[in-house]
Length: 313
Image (cartoon, rainbow, N blue to C red; front, side):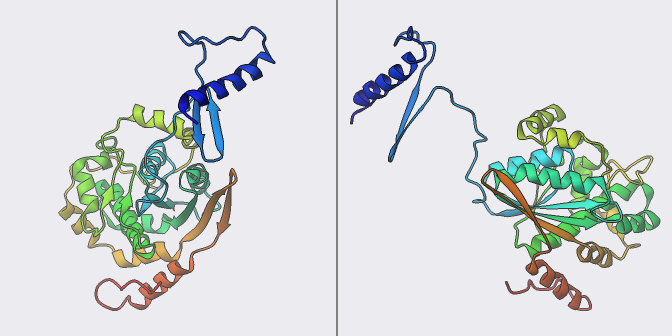
């Protein structure tokens, strides 16, 4: 059938249906109060009067895998959404400062955020990494003004190992340039030194109002509003470094056993998988076998030189 014939047939049915409700309904092709849209697909005719704006972007999980450092704050949730909208499948990593992942509020906030974000990519994995003992060793050995940058560097190193275990292509963070002291260009460059994977920062040029507006739209705003203690503000220095150099952090790390601290994080990891199906998000707890093999292989290679090769799938 041609488009004019479809218009007549569909219009006749719409008018018939509406006049059963209100007898004064009429057709006005010049200045209509409501315009109906029609789409013909195989076996169906879709008729609608309103068009809702979707997220746009690219099909879910078609653009490769990245590891997302998820704090639970406004920025990380929005950064995750922006990457998923471009077809990237994210593996989430959250660092908690409590005695166990079940005893601290930050892990619960991260899990709730993953539940909200999972429908945008259908399946998600969340790694929970203990950071308290790592943090305390940094506080004991490193210059006070570099603490937060060393925290962030250690988080990046641990996430880089998860990236290797998951065969992901890089890292994602919620950094916005110069929003806080640790996010100046100098400090971001210092933290990234030594990583052999790219770090994507989708919020780099966004201001806070833009981020909050998108957080409300995505559905993570209310979660991030809840009070919880993130790792980085703990043991906050009085005067954090603003213009650090990679060499400064390298020198500070000489007082730390960096490889051992990375191992502490990996060996203490917990994980859960989430799946969105039929309008519900389900959760299954447990470390993936591939990750367990990776950590065991890494431990076995600890006395060797260089990075261990990836274990066979």
